[in-house]
Length: 294
Image 1 (spheres, rainbow, N blue to C red):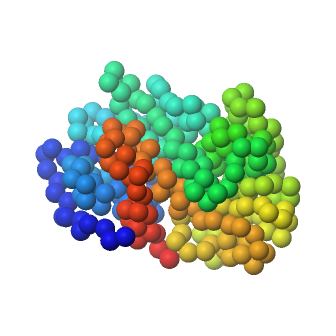
Image 2: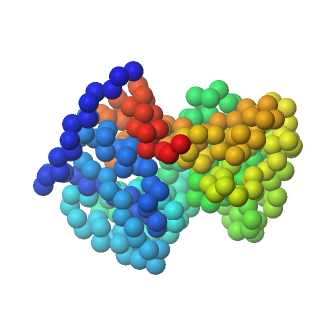
Image 3: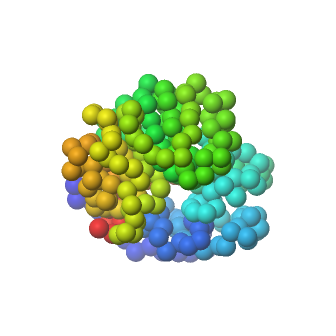
């Protein structure tokens, strides 16, 4: 599908400002995704990356919302959990995961948070044709993205969720919140043996560097199991290549961000653009694939 030409972005005194906070921010893809959409659809807004050290992020967030033209904040590593702790309100998924990737100022002046990684992930599973309800699932890596994915899998009706992390004790509080909120069987593992699971998710950074080991052994996957690697790469990661060699169905992580884009826009009040993208996500897909290195 041919996309309309993007006119040059015009920033004026009326422009609504959004920021994505992280440390570092050189890797963030959201500006390359959202800014062309704003320009193409005539939305007077801009999203810019801002590098803020962890020790200063809570103070920065409070001061940032003193700007009357700030539409909201997106959050990436390592700020998703520290900023959650300062919110007055948060959606259910963010509360269980104790992590957020979007913050806005409510009409009453209170900070509100939302968590969309897991929502986008589950929508991606629907697109791939991977069933979740009643599935036995394993999430390898229980950082911000992994916790979001696990919470959304539970919300979607997964029967079992195995959490794998280098620090199993650190997962216990999260596991207890999952059990208290949904009926899924939740277990914690120190090693990633994928045997017996219908869906296995890599939510670790393993695969970003050439010398990284695989997060788990694809040879131990059950016949018919599915794998999703959420690394933001527009080419097969080492795990996806290894799964292909074993004849295992495996999908990349770009779909997670594509599918959650409308939810971000709705959260920030950009409902018309959100609805356009829900009906046709070709623009989001093209922009994100162009932003992600092969």
